[in-house]
Length: 616
Image (cartoon, rainbow, N blue to C red; front, side):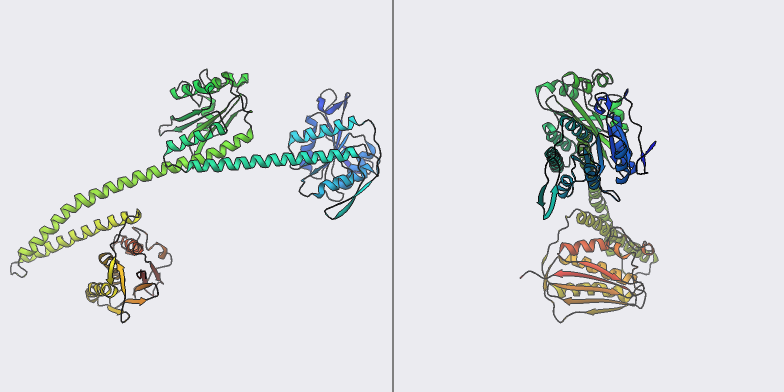
């Protein structure tokens, strides 16, 4: 409802508590104390009024300074609670006019401020404010401050008028007309706010340091059980007197990983948990909240009758309460949308009760732990996959290579014993078939070698036997191998090189493999009558080889994927395994060089690779 003020403004009035229902905090001598809330934000005004009325105060809400002054002229108030920043008249001006113009120096005025500017305190003294409350305010702290101001008012039986004092603060002059009691109240409240801020900062610093230390513990192992064991040992006694860690297996059942406690009182509980008699996640409520709903649970008071009654006789909540423990927090370990397990923390009788702030801390700790556990699981899965791959490749390289070698040797033997020219058709056919068999065996053996090379490159185990070799010899061998293939396709094969090339450190067979791949691809994808070029340049640090062609080129979409393993453009999927360029780059980088490609559709493709010059 609203009540008209003397200035013509409508002053909203929140329904206050009646004398029959008001709490003692809002009453003095049987009279309900009245507070004027000056706040331009309707939402914040309603919140403040509601909080005060819950404590038994009667409130009147004024939306601005003019409405507040009008209300004070016509009604009795025991305290004014005013925001500072408002359109029109500020809270400072409201306070000054209440104390001087309206003639109410005895009426306490409490200002709401962010206290972000040191001048706030001086401006408060200058206007005669009695106290202030920082924003955003804590509900309990605000009520305590209101009660303090009202109590101080009752203690002052009479108001004395003192002389004004001129002061200079941060280069500005101020005239202070406040009484010494008001000055003392404001300065004491300023100190209290600084203490609260300092304590909050210390708590935040402690929390950040604790989580940083926990992170350091979590990265010391890639074994799931070891991670949880180390974490639990770190937690006790830092933030708990007993801590348990559990994991959920593939069947959905929990497995106890570690239980650590501090002090003989908890020994029986720890043993009971290890034996399974007192599960750390009690059947029912805790298990549902933690494992099914993935929500943390805070049991602030383990001694409360309703808490004990809600849990099984052998449950950890009941057992902990029976030996005098204070609080419990249970949090799920959730990573990437899956609940992996849980952590349970118990505070002993020497600690304070756990609060929502403690829950927030262990929830963040559980988040970091869950990620570490999940990463360890993924690492283990990757190791198992790698081991399975290596086992398969071992079978391929040994058990398959042997029969392929036998096939190759048998085909070679047939070619040796069969005459090269014969008038017998069957003999000529047999030679052709033997040659097909030998080529297929050779290709199968090369494919096995490629698969082994890919594995070595991925694992960082590819080694090269680099020895001093004349770069011109490498180039000559590559040209001699590629020229016949280019001639069969009627291609122009152009070679450009300096008059002399230096010695480089290279594995001759491996570099030949790089040349074979690059020149083979250039010849393969260049149409009949096209041009393939092999150019060599000498730089200050390397020998730079370039292979280019006049083929169709590579689209910008495909260019970034050229060196991916098993990757092929759709139109070339039947022309190879997609391993050649991946292996070529691995070989080049193993030599300390680089391999890259440039291309535009319709203008051919150019591949570059370098071999560094020997040091010195």
